[in-house]
Image 1: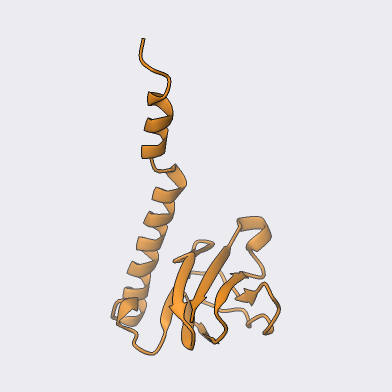
Image 2: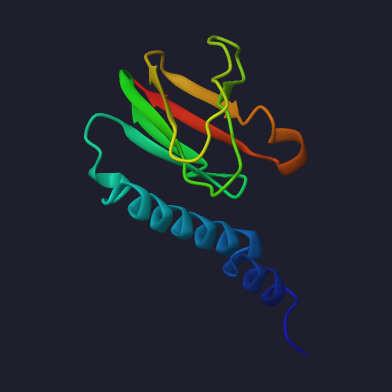
Length: 133
């Protein structure tokens, strides 16, 4: 009989299925961005980019230095999204339709949760910006 501690150790090594699904969705989102704008999102020099695609923020968590501008880009085919900071420090963005963007500059260090106004409850479309000094 094998020791019982082997099973928990094996479970820790296995990535959850949703992690693979999210990675696949974010890879598709990047492909859509390139298709729409002709370059990878990493080529943007004046902002850090978060893609909005299939009810997912890509990446869902982003760490930036204080003073950094974050640009959310809707690369979905038909769905509109918004950005709403959980602390209410700025009004919810307008609905962003495909190829539209919104920028926000983060000045205060600390975690800043945000969500998609129309999709956070039904689709769990939430994200986090961690602002470092």
